[in-house]
Length: 330
Image 1 (tube, rainbow, N blue to C red):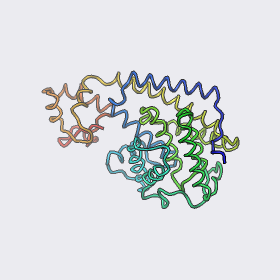
Image 2 (cartoon, helix red, strand yellow):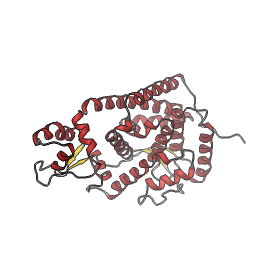
Image 3 (cartoon, rainbow, N blue to C red):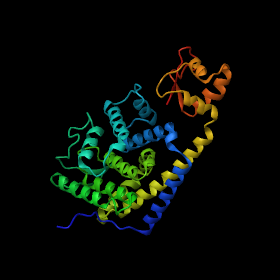
């Protein structure tokens, strides 16, 4: 019996995108060390989680998602808050994923859907459809076929990882996974997480590139590409769509990194260097760490610019001059 191979056609447009993306990744990696910008990395991860959940109708705002991740109390539906905690736990272990492992897939689905899905970490036993809001795009294959379909997909991916470019392979996997819809819930989140994991194995910079936020911006086009592939019987249209979105988000990352380098004064950099994450500091403690005596100079050159750039937050923002005020690096 011939091994399964997902049907798709490599086009000149795809190859052009692969070339463009590779060039942009190389340029970003060479000119801006994201490893040295933890605030950008964390902000982008929060964007990824917020967008991926928003596509699935989670109503929490970006600020609320940030607060949940930072351990602050948020008023909202417990299910939605738990979804954020679960997604953050999964994304924080992104580097440990073996994209070709079905046991890993089930384990991370268990993380992603902990406390909120009955069949957490297990393939579905019932029938499911792919929906964009209330609109059914198509019905997924019957549940009894899921284990074999997943075995076939992962066997192909393991074999193809040395012959198919990761940018194309990740997009093929993403579509095939959505088509099979192996879980009762969380399929979209898992498809996007796994796509990111595949790309991160190729270039580690993708750990912190919020592809999910680009998909959210073009959500209708995302589902249109999936629907077209279902009609065409192959994933060419979806691969092209995903490559175009990855190409776009890299332009945004280039601008983001450039602006970050320009905006961060030496004063702000020094302030961030003496602060640990999520620890509250008094104004006097920070001035002492920096060896400063002028309260006005500290506020004008160090503290206020850092707060304006959302790199430092106040514990009592409604009372900026409170004697109980503390400052936290975010």
